[in-house]
Image 1 (cartoon, helix red, strand yellow):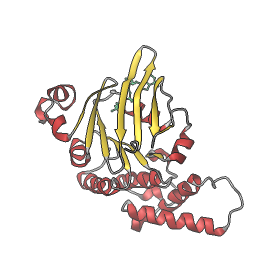
Image 2 (image 1 turned 45 degrees about the horizontal axis):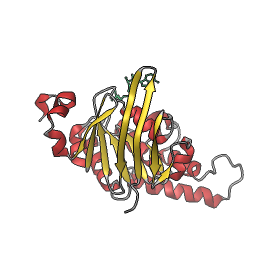
Image 3 (image 1 turned 135 degrees about the horizontal axis):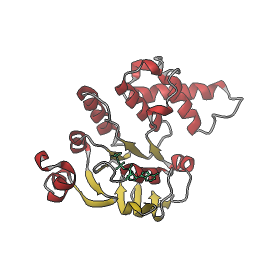
Image 4 (image 1 turned 180 degrees about the horizontal axis):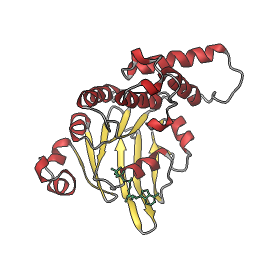
Length: 250
Ligand SMILES: Nc1ncnc2c1ncn2[C@@H]1O[C@H](COP(=O)(O)OP(=O)(O)OP(=O)(O)O)[C@@H](O)[C@H]1O
C-alpha cells in the first residue's frame, strides 16, 4: 500500500508550560479533504504552521509521500509539494491579479531573482497565471488591480497563489473567513472540484462548509485530537458537541 500524501506522526509543541500540540497524528490522502476543526485557541494554526515549516515541532515527524520532511525549511517543503494558502497580506495590492499569480509561478520555478530571462519564461508564467485564475473562478479578473477586488475574490486569489507552486497537498487556513453566503457557496464548489487532484487539509470554522466538503473530520481540543471520523461521527459525538459545537447545533 502506498504511503499517504501527508502524514503527521505524534507531533508535539509547547510554548513554555502551554502544550499547544499534544501528540497529534493525522493523514491526508490524494483526493481527500480532511478538515480540522476545534474551538478558538485549540492549536489549529500552530499545527499547520508546523506542517508548512514556519514552526518547528518539539517532537514527532511529518512525512510527504513517505519522505520525512520534518527538518526541511518552508521553501523546500513548498518545492516538495506542501502548499499553504498565502494570506491576503502577501498580495501586492497595486499589481493586477495576473501579475501576482505570474510572480508566484516564477518564484516557484526559482526564477524570481534572475535578472536576464528569456521572454518565453515570462510568457509561460503569464499563461499559467491565466489558467490558474480561470481555475479559481477569476477568469475575467486578470487585469484588475488587486485593490479593486472584492474580499471573496481575494480569497480566490489566495488559492491561485497557493496553486502556483504546483502543490500535492493544500493546507488551507479558513478560506471561508469573511465570505458572504454566495461567495462561501462558490468557495465550497471550488474546493470540491480541487480535491480530486490534491489532498486538502482544511481548517475551517464554517461548519456548513466542513460538513459539505470533508471526507474526514478531526476535532482538535487543547492541542489533542479528540475525535477523527465522518461528518456523522462528529455530529453525533456528545464530547464534540459539548467541547465545540454547542448542544444546540445537532
Ligand atoms: N508564539 C506564541 N507564543 C505563545 N503562545 C502562543 C503562540 N502562538 C500561539 N500561542 C497560543 O497557542 C494556542 C493555540 O493557538 P492557535 O493560534 O494555534 O489556535 P487556533 O486553534 O488556530 O485558534 P483560532 O481558531 O482562534 O485561530 C493559543 O492558546 C495561543 O494563545
